[in-house]
Amino acid sequence: MIRLKYLLVGLLLVLTACATGSKTDGLTVSFEEFQKILEPRSMVLLEGKDTLLVNIAMPGDKYPKVYRYRITEKKFTEEYDHGQTISQITEDRTGKNIYLLIDDNGDENYKIYTYDPNTKKTTLLFGKKGFKSYPINSDESGKSLFIVSNYENKAVYSIYKMDMATKKMERVSDGKTNLAGGLVSLDGTKIAAARYLSNNENQVFVIDTDKKTTTPMFKKKNSVFHPSFFDSNSKSLYGTTDYKRDRTGCASIPLNKPNHVYYKVEKKDRDISCGYGEWSKLYFLHEIYKGRTELKLFRKMWTQSVEIPQLLQNQSVSMVAFDRTNNQMILKFTAANNPGSLYKFDTKTLKTAHVMDLNKSKIPMADLAVSEDFEYKSFDGMKIHGILIAKPEWKTSGKKYPLVIWPHGGPDSFERHSYRSWFQYLALNGFVVYAPNYRGSAGYGKKFETLNDKDWGGAHIKDLVSARQAVEQLPWVDEKNAFIFGGSFGGYSTLATATFQPDAFKAAVGVVAIGNLFTFMKSIPPDEAWQTEFKREMGDPVKDKKLYTDRSPFFHVDKIQIPLQIYQAENDVRTVKAEMDTFVAELRKKGKPVEYTVLKDVGHGLERPESRKQIMEGTVKFFKSMIR
Image 1 (spheres, rainbow, N blue to C red):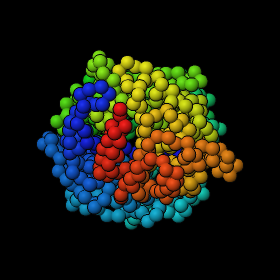
Image 2 (image 1 turned 90 degrees about the horizontal axis):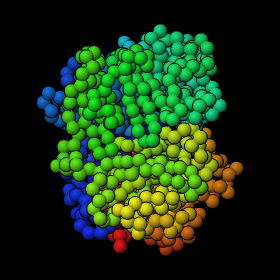
Image 3 (image 1 turned 90 degrees about the vertical axis):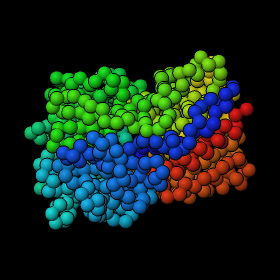
Image 4 (image 1 turned 135 degrees about the horizontal axis):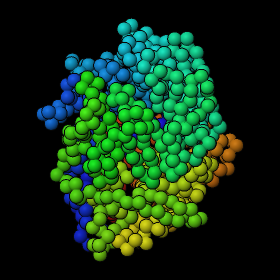
């Protein structure tokens, strides 16, 4: 499935704290002040100019724009305003062509615009209303750009080659196989592309862009291979795979030996992904375990390691921009209690230099909560790991603090030891946050990740209840005031918990949630990747009608006993407004307490700061009103 990873950034208002008991003792700060903790969505580094173009919503903005940041001057200036959300800024392989991805207020049907930083003007390069298009990469000359789009068939994503001189496009894939992105060779003659049957199974093909022929490269039952890079002579394809393994590792497939997988780096206790920076000439590994991601750099393929500065070693890289002219990279490092800092990295000398801290507010870094590992045994004895977020001083304060359980979205995702505005906002308002990576989460092995397949609303909901029972044993957690709050699949998990475990929490907040599995299955995109993934996750709506009915909160609203607060994005194409309108109407018909807010001009990613403000302010006020 095409995994569009949304940065659900909470740009937040922190309310006045109460100094006693389990009420709150957080920090008082205005929304405008909290918004000065900057969270860029994407960025590019202009060639040879020591200047960043940053896609971000600055304090006071209604939606994300493009800003120019001059590194030597340490100053942001507004660069380009499209009149609506700019979803991403990116560039081609040459670094000379810059593109903006823009949809229609969150409908995810992206169009590709070229952007000229000299004239500050955009030109529509490609895009059709109601269809999605996005660039993959160019060849090394920049003369050809490769694009993925479903404009010929909404149910099939194909790969196209655009001549940048004439702007003419030709399809290079067969038009029948649904392909998720691709990896373009330097000369542009080969593309490695994947057909996803689910998050846990794909097929990989190598397309000859001149001959327009397709060669199957990887096809293994219940296994994936994510292409990362071609070797220097394009004789082997390298990538991340879980073939015959529970964990992912780095492996290669010789192009003349399709389906022959050779592991290069693997470990039994963690997932490993690998890559190569063709301009930095550095190889890298990401090691993922227990919510942590460790970056390792190498001069040669997994040898001659590059030392990362000590102060950055416990942080994660979440964004990278390149200046090929000066052999420099800008990296964004973050940690759970650090919204991020940008550093310049010279790929030749291997030296780093601080560029800026993203906390521009008056909120001291010391006031941000920290994360720690917390593991518990669930109802059936299974060990569940999660991330506990709280201020260190709470443990010895002699007070008790209310608890919020956060079920993550995905569904095949997981929470990490990384900065989350949602969590920091709640903590600043005096709430302990626990984010369990319950069964079905990624990052703990393939077997664990598939445990909730065809069990939505089942064991993973009991994991959430067990999480509350475990965390409330901590002497500084208020066992009488526990709440649940989640979005997307986490929103489904929230509503399912309120329905099937009605006395487990005091109140619940669901954001872009799912209430009816039947209508959800009808609303998701028609392409194969989405359809097969969710049938594997949820079952077939016809064959598994009873399961859908049993696990849909909509059909069991009589069981709900606690107050609900629900937020729905107006233009959401995944969890659609019509479904939630019907669910809320049923709740009100049965006399259930529910507050319902429709968020204007946003989609599933909640792109506008005002929407996040509504959610975060509303959630804290709602939970605080329940504390007794």
